[in-house]
Amino acid sequence: MQPIELLKTRRSIRAYTPQAVPREIIEDIIDCGRLAPTARNEQPWEFVVVTDKALRSRIAQAADYGRFIADAPACVAVLSRQTKYYLEDGSAATLNILLAAHAHGLGACWVAGDKKPYAARVVQMVGAPEDYRLISLVSIGYPAEKPETRKRPLREMLHWERF
Image (cartoon, rainbow, N blue to C red; front, side, top):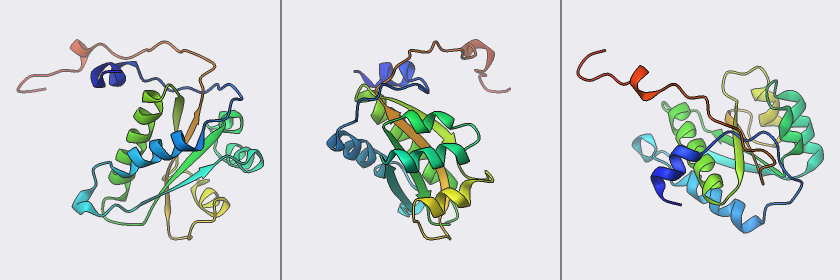
């Protein structure tokens, strides 16, 4: 898939087939996450891949808009040390993970982490140090849906020279 097509066709997928995702593909996706841009090259992120169904179910119960995580074959918890730009860095890594999953023919969905009341519980559930921040949860699997896009037209949001 060409890069522009990849960007324009990625969608949030919340329904998955039960087929497991091969470990090598997950590792390649996470490798793309670690190569994201980062302020001052801090690379504050850590990634915990959760394939255990019981743990995914506990995470899904905690995440108010992430119940579908329980049915995804994998969930990535994107965590970060608390640096000045931890949220920007972790968000860049999350986007790389979403795009890499799509490039591999997988579906994925970004579930909020930072500033959510369940964030500290998820950090604890995945065994990370308590001073780490949960940036996002990303469900990953083979898509069982193909949602249509509802994006605003470019002409409504593109401004030249001034707003």
